[in-house]
Length: 151
Image (cartoon, rainbow, N blue to C red; front, side, top):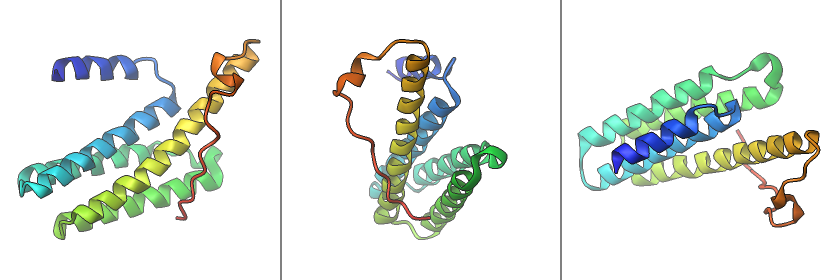
């Protein structure tokens, strides 16, 4: 099953837009933290540590790709969010807490949803620019997600 999952992930990454790659990286961090929470519940210190360390590494990739020249306040807010997230995960390494991990996952889910909205908007703009209207634009698409995270 891992081979099929890896092949699917590699296919998803190939040719993905920068926004899609951010969504995928957010999903990876979320999965890492879910695995870390499971390891914490099972008292598997090594696995917990490895999963949190991997999440911190991926967050570093997300943070290093921020475009401050063009991103303005959004890039600054994301930079702050990623810095706080990394600090919180380092704290969880020293004071393990499922609640602490769960809070970080919740915050990441909100950020991921915002990026998914950006991805939808880009697709809509691309199809509108091409002169076509996507079938989901007829009202079956959910309303825009509002993210209330305050950095």
